[in-house]
Image (cartoon, rainbow, N blue to C red; front, side, top):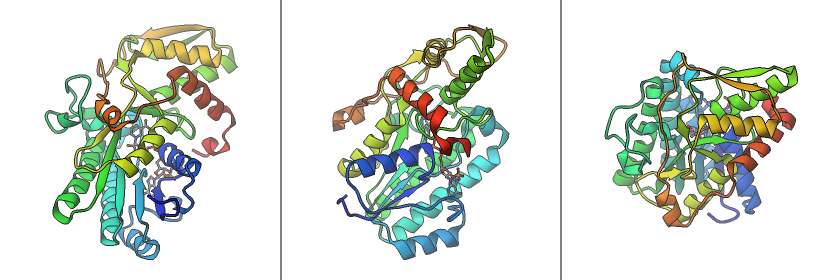
Length: 313
Ligand SMILES: NC(=O)c1ccc[n+]([C@@H]2O[C@H](COP(=O)([O-])OP(=O)(O)OC[C@H]3O[C@@H](n4cnc5c(N)ncnc54)[C@H](OP(=O)(O)O)[C@@H]3O)[C@@H](O)[C@H]2O)c1
């Protein structure tokens, strides 16, 4: 990308899209175009075609998606599949039709099989059954990354995809039912502290191991890959480090200053025992994460307290 290349960031008000805009701006890119969901519904094919035919972006970061935690996914399987599939196909197809030089598609580590060997390598894609609770979302994401691959193979495009681990940071979603584990814990411990609650009860026994990447580090990788990577195989984005949910809750409680008890409701499911990405491919390309988890949680909590955009979500 040149500093004045026309770059479209789809989903720029979301956590990932806003981080990509911040990173592009920080690196001196000056010609970034955006549309809010209200201005352009990416599920509407004709509107997407008109937008691309008029604007002709040279580069596209596809960070728009219908995203949610386990409850939201389970309760709306059809919506998650339909909206994500249509949105992706509309954007990727219109980008190709209008000569977009390069597109980067954002997926998620849930595309990998439920019982994939840990840490999960990029080449374990489609080697086993998906996790049932987010099967619809994962299938839509697999279709998106495969469509990029098939355009490359049939028409010689240079469309790539990146699969991030669990993300957190500015503009995250803190909705009580629709959020992911780390933002949900930030909200719960904040509310418990405010209310002076004696204890907070968390689901399961706290033993599952998980990995978390600060979203600005992901955005740095996304821009890096746009400039330095071509290929049909996706690239994992993570830290390669894991901690237990119990350790995570203790860290969040410490950052927030919650001093009450943490209790575990073991009648609730734990989820997959371990979920870690193999990040050796990104590392070999010359990229590594910068933000350690405790520092990142501090930055996220500050955003939770002070960011007016968050209140709208
Ligand atoms: N969050 C994570 O932990 C995580 C982890 C791995 C991968 N990812 C991936 O990163 C990408 C972005 O996730 P995120 O966390 O940034 O999600 P997010 O904060 O919910 O942002 C998604 C954005 O997409 C927009 N959008 C959704 N449907 C749209 C439509 N039909 N037309 C136009 N805009 C639409 C949303 O706008 P509205 O809010 O106005 O609808 C929102 O701005 C996704 O592909 C996701 O799979 C996220």
